[in-house]
Every structure is written in C-alpha cells, then in structure tokens.
Amino acid sequence: MKDFDSCLSISRRHTLEPGGTAAFALLRRRGRDGKRLARCDAATARRAAVVELANRDLEDEVGVQLLERTAKSVRLTDAGRAFLDEARAILKHTTEAVLKARAIGGKRETELHVGDFPLATARVMPGLLRDYQKAVPNVRVKLHDWAVEKQLAGVFDGRLQLAIIVRPLTGNWLHELRFEELLTARICLAVSCNHPFARRQSVSLAEAVREPFVGLMHEEYPQHRAYLAAIFAKLNDKPRVVEEHDGWAGVFSAVDAGTGVAIASDAFSYAFSDRIKLLSLTPEPKRVAIGIITRKGKLSPAAEKFCQCAKEAFAAIR
Image 1 (tube, rainbow, N blue to C red):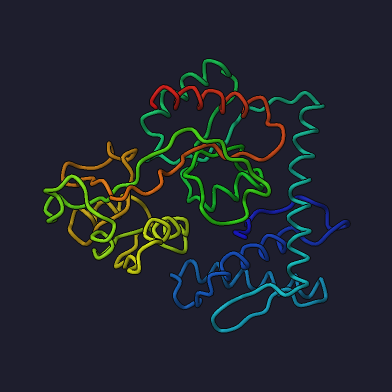
Image 2: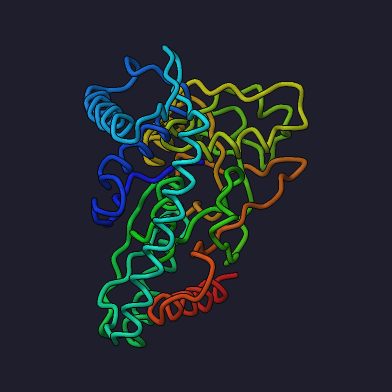
C-alpha cells in the first residue's frame, strides 16, 4: 500500500501520538521500494532520518517492533501490519465523522480541494471552473498538481475531496476509492522531430522497445513505469529507461534534445512543441482511462456538483 503521511487528530488519552502514527506510515511508504537512504537527496535523507526517529519512539510506546529494518529495505512486521490496518481504519472513520458533524451542524464547505492532472485537463479546466463557480459561488476550488500516488493518498485521508487522474494500474486503492471514467486517450510514442522515426506516422511496438526511453522518476511516479511495462508486456524485449525526470516538462525537453523517446498520449499533444512528434503504435495498446477518483460513499454537495460539472465538460470534448 502507498501509505499516507497525514496526522490523525485524536487525543493522546485515547490513542498514540498522531505524529508518530503519521511518521510510521511515511517510513513504510518510503521503505517499500527498498532504496538505500544514501541514494536519496540531502533533503529527503534528512526527512527520512526524522521519520525514522519518530518511528523508533512509536515502537517504544507501543512496546513491540513494528518495522523490520535491513540495509536494503524496511518491512512491516506482523505487529506493524496490524497497527497500520487499525490506523487506516481510524483515519477513515475520523474523516467520515468530520463530514457527518459538518452536515448535521449545517456548516457549508467554503473550499474544495481537487487533485489535478494538467496535461489531461488544461483544455477543459478553465471552462469547468467557470461553470462550477457559477453553480456554487461560495465554494473556492483549489487545484493540486501532485503525483498519482500522492493524489490517491490525499483523497483517502481527506486532504483532497476528489482528483482527476489517469487510472492507476497497480495498488489496492479500489478497496476504498471509486473511479469514474471521463474519457480515454490513445497511447503514442513521442519522438524528436530529428529522430529517424519522425518521417513516419506509426511505429511497431517491436521497433519502439529497442529505443532508449525517457520517463518519470520511479520513486515518485511508480504508475508511469507500470504503464510502460504493460504496453510492452507481450514482447520479449523490455523498454530501457536511460533518464528519469521529476515532471513531464523535463521528459519532453529530453525527448526534444534527442536523449530518447517517451510514452505519451494524444490528449497531451497541445503541450508539445513543434519539435516533438507523436507516432501511433502498432498494434495499438489499450487506451488509457482518465477520470475522477473519490472516496466510496456519499460525497459532499460541493464535491458532487464538481463531479457533475466535470462530466459535462469532458463529455463536450469526446
């Protein structure tokens, strides 16, 4: 599970310190990839060290070992798994309790926090926000351009009321969250206009897989690597990622510079310079779904209205 570094606002009289619980979840998330601390940058290393100290304090308070640590990985013990499952349940019920209390007390939402994927929404979002503001003038929408994993975590723990994202291929998010498709997009190969493929309209998967690939950083964007693997799953050869970036702008710049090719979508074509060309892949991979992620159950009126406006806005461009 991609755990969530958020605090549970619960009194110490009834449970452990919320900061410790959050730190435990954060270290679990960073440790599951088995990356050495030395490979992180300085800021990440300092943060991880603080989190580790907090988790040690938490283990002292609980009285049992929650994490099994080795030089290459950090794993949950059986006790740690049980503790994490209970912490997730508490967080879920706490969020639901806040929503119910607000509904009963008649307090209306004044802000709606929405996860955004600008590459897929940029052409739609301005009109969507205008329509929503007309329908719900007293609610201010705040957009958050986060990685998919962080957006899933944000919707789960209540930092986000909903998110518009590419459907994740991996993870157990379906247990707690709901995905509603808004549109599907064609998967393409992005190449520099100086690339030999640029004179063509399409390229086979077998040809594409032999090219060096530029992608997103695996630690922050694991879904990108999951999609890359799924696209070429039926081939014996596997894509070779030669360079990773912390955002799509870096990926596109590297493709433009001729560092490699990249997997992209026709939904992103407006964002490319004229020095990048999109090629069809044959056989055509399964189209990627872009949609709304929300918590299961009844949404707040503000969130429900935003979902309705989003469906109408995306339906207009299909």
